[in-house]
Amino acid sequence: MDRSALPSCSDLPVASGIGLRVAHHERVRAEQPNIAWLEVHTENFLGGGATPALLEALRERYAISLHGVGLSLGSAEGLDEEHLARIAALVRQIEPAAISDHVSWSVTGGVYFNDLLPIPYDEDALTVVARNVMRFQEAVGRTVMVENPSTYLRHVQSDRAEPQFLAELCQRSGCGLLLDVNNVFVSTENHGDDAQAYLSAIAHLPIGEIHLSGHHLRQIGNRSIRIDDHGSPVSDPVWALYERALAVIGPRPTLIEWDSALPPLEILLAEANKAQARLDVAKRSAA
Image (cartoon, rainbow, N blue to C red):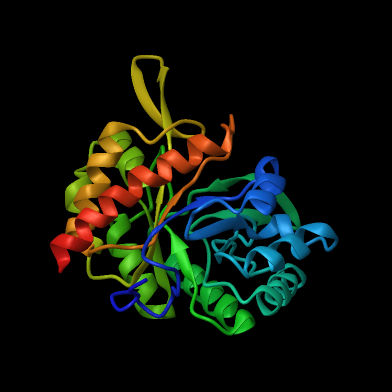
């Protein structure tokens, strides 16, 4: 697979992959489906026992991406060094093709929340996240990626748009961007922004991976809000935005992310095939 267009934050094949969840561990181990790469939630493999051994076995067949959900890069009190050390040990064991986490916070005072909570887009928050990302990179000895969030509100103290915040974060910390296209769609629809303008504003950033997933529309009072739930097929508008992203930034490794109401493995692979078909078109256009 051609990696010539990828930044240093990613050594994934420029192809589609799927998120590997517990319900599919045994089938993937036994059947080794025809997919280029797998992504796992890092925290699911920090406890020792069978799961890290499974991952170590699968890396012989697949490129592996470690996608964290609990490091809390937006925590003003800094990173949990014990948690970080366990992640670094897993990185040494697995030698993944990519490492990532989220532009969010989920820990304060030693208390972990089961949510990726939004941060303000201002100078103070930028300083905190950049510092934490650099510490993350120092610990794992690699360039990492950060993922753009799905958002449902805006902090009143934000003084810059999300694309500008991400660009400054990449510049200050040297990290890459994991572009979640579904999150772009959800956030811009919720806030009345222009999704294509968002893509144009981040096109120059070191984007090493793309995420695609499902969301649902919820009516709250007289307002409709799109909720990022990773529990359904990719919607037609998100597929269209993905095609636009490929045209703007070029072909990138693309993950089908599905975490709730998990379907049979065949459905995940079918979604990955849809992404692969669009990637193939983008590769031909780029050539």
